[in-house]
Length: 391
Image (cartoon, rainbow, N blue to C red):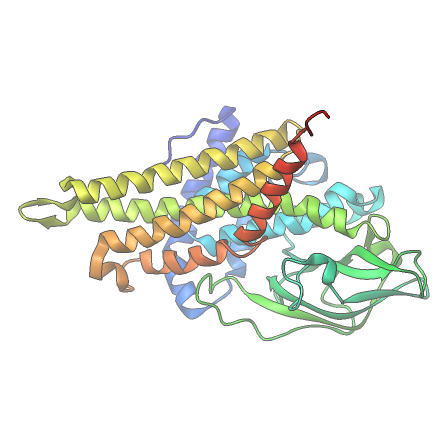
C-alpha cells in the first residue's frame, strides 16, 4: 500500500513516484531470489546510480541530487520496502561519501567526490574491528608515516560491501604528531581496493540481508598517498561520529521500509484469509495486533523525520538520530515478528516474504551502534541537559 507522505515540493513527490516505479519494476521482482542465492546485486546499484539515486543528499555542484535529508530518507524507505539489502547499500554508500563531502579538502571534493556521488562508484565504510565493535577508540589497525604518505596495517571487520566496493572510507590509528613515537589517535583515509596489500576476506555467512555482502578487509602494508588523508591527522573520531549520526538515520529509514513491507503483507493476508466464516482481519484479536503494527510503523517514520528535519535545519540532531535508530529498529523487529504470527504457519514458510523480513530486521538492532549503545547515547545526552541545582 502506498504510504501517504507529506513532501516539501512537487519535485520531491516526483522523486518518490520515480523511486516507487523503479523499485517495483526492477528491484522487487529479484529480491527473494538474490537473497536466497546470497548474490550481491551490483547491477542494481549501477541502475540506481544512473537514475540519480546514489547521491541524493549531496550538492548538485559535485554531481549529487541536492535533496533535503528528509526527502532522501523517504526514498531509502521506499526502496527498503521492496529490497532492504539494496536500501542499506545506498545508506552505506552515503555514509562512505560523507567524510570527503563534509571534511575533505577542496581538491578532494573537486577530484574525488563527483565520481563517488555520481553513481558509477560504490562505497564502503571501514570503521569497526573484530575486537572493537561499539568501542571505536579500541581500534588497532594503523597507518604510519612512510615517505610522502602512509603505510596501513591491520584488519577492519563487518564491512558492508567488503570486497565489492570501489572505495573505502577507512579509519586507522595514527601518531598524534604525524611521526612515529607520538601518542596515537584516529585518522580517516580514502582507500581504494587496487592498492598493493589490500584484500577482502571471505564474506560472512549471515542469517539475513544475505544479498548485502559483509566481509573483513585486510591491510598488509598498504601504501596510501598523502592526499588520501581525509581531514587533519587525528580528526578521525570526530569524522566517524559525525557520519554515524547520518548513518543511524539511514538505518532508521531502512527499518521503517522493512516494517511497512511486513505490515502490507500481513494486512493483505488477513483481508483474504477467512476463518469462522469471515476474513480474519475482522476478528478483534487480529485487528488489534495489526493496529499496533501500523501504529509502530507510523511512529517510527515520524521519529526519523523529526531527526532529519533538524539535520536539514542545521540543528544538533545526534540524540534524535539515536532515538530514531532505537525506535525504528525495535519497531521493525516487533512488526516483522508479528507479521509472521498473523500469517501463522504460512508465515513460517518461504512461500511468503515475512520470514525473510523477520531475519533481516534483527541485524538492524545491532549495526550502526547496537540499541544498547543508543540508549547510552540518549541517556548521556539527557544528563548533559540537566542544570545542577543551586547551592
